[in-house]
Length: 234
Image (cartoon, rainbow, N blue to C red):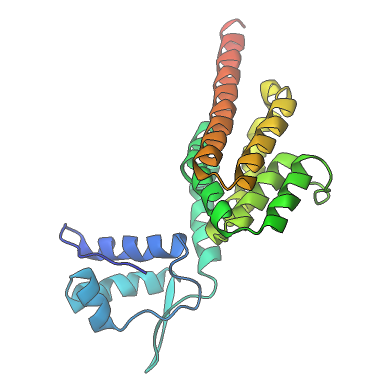
């Protein structure tokens, strides 16, 4: 895990932000014991008073817990706690908001898959996009493909986002005829992403994922324009 010195205002908030970021990126896992307060205060470059203020806030939010004489630990259910706080804001998001979130992390997902997934796991992914492997009952192929990618990235936050909120994304997509008509294109784009992963070509895989998400966004924008024209003509 990495921490850096903090010099701006609202120091306790900055401490909280760094700890939360380390949890989200997988550096701090559930159950991890944090360094001692003197060590943390030194790493952050803040006083122990500021550090304790930040830790108190995190404890009140259920992010950490303390054991007398043992230290401070990341809560076992921290990911569920974080998910609960995300749910309110995500439900208020637009379809385009959610696509932009995916644009931020899914290129990183394919990069991590290339570095971490075995040849066998990638072969199973190709079997999925070629229709040789069945998805779970009730799951769309699009959902299962992106969830499987996130799972292979070994980052539980990525997988949790796809798993928990794809129903919201899917709800938006179900209202779009353009998305329904893009099925063949989507399948082809998925296959090109996996082919780049099989080649262990990070740049190509990122480009293919960015292209795929850009096409999803363009389709959503076109659909939104169509709805606006239809509304104005009534």
